[in-house]
Length: 291
Ligand code: COA
Ligand code: MG
Image (spheres, rainbow, N blue to C red):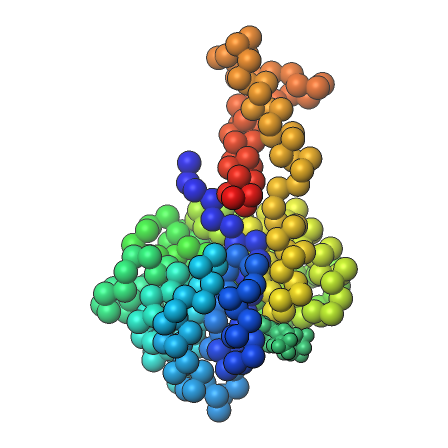
């Protein structure tokens, strides 16, 4: 079984914001995305890129995965961003505005040509209409470790902008696309993170959105503010009830009388070996989070 790496709470930190950068060491999020793209104004792009080496010189938070989001490779900054990010050896480089598998393959070639270690993964923003139309082919790269593709991040603000749909609190017009992303990520064996909630002062609405996202199958949520970390960590961890249920499934299959059985009855419900596999996965996830 593949080891679970929690990515419940993944916080964007603008590389241009020193005050926010100074906070990183104390944060309880599972990953941090140092942003060179949307959060950094054009006039600040080059100064922000120049800060990367200093940020990574002493890994500010050992518990967190550290990711760099670069500008689109088609932009004036993308190519230099990619080289600067690669030289920091982050856990991942997040590519925005990915449209096709080729975008990832080209970035991967640059990493290979510059001897970036295999530990430097590629993450992809899914935020353009083309990416949604090509999502299966993009996700399929996840099956080839040489592609480095490891995680998708929904770019909901860009999708709203590019498609003209109305952004509503219940996200009704986004949900079909979000579900498509989850499905594709599963097909490719990669993680899938939900988009950000812009309204960072309304933590009740945020917690509700996290609960929904967890029910939709997302592994975690991308965040814009430290106040959002706690709710995300809670929502994307298995609940106490789910852990108890998984334990009972595991115990039932461990009974001598059930050895070799494919299906059993447990508390009036049919439980199959596939549920045992599901339960074991959930328990491994709970253990990884607990430790
Ligand atoms: N990472 C780390 N620290 C952050 C942070 C973040 N993303 N967002 C805010 N903070 C810090 C602030 O620096 C502030 O620190 P202080 O207590 O030392 O003053 C503290 O948390 C409280 O911040 P607050 O005053 O509530 O918010 P703000 O008005 O300073 O900032 C935003 C609000 C939205 C501008 C800011 O949260 C932000 O830039 N978020 C990231 C945006 C981003 O990356 N977008 C691109 C992806 S969608
Ligand atoms: Mg975007």
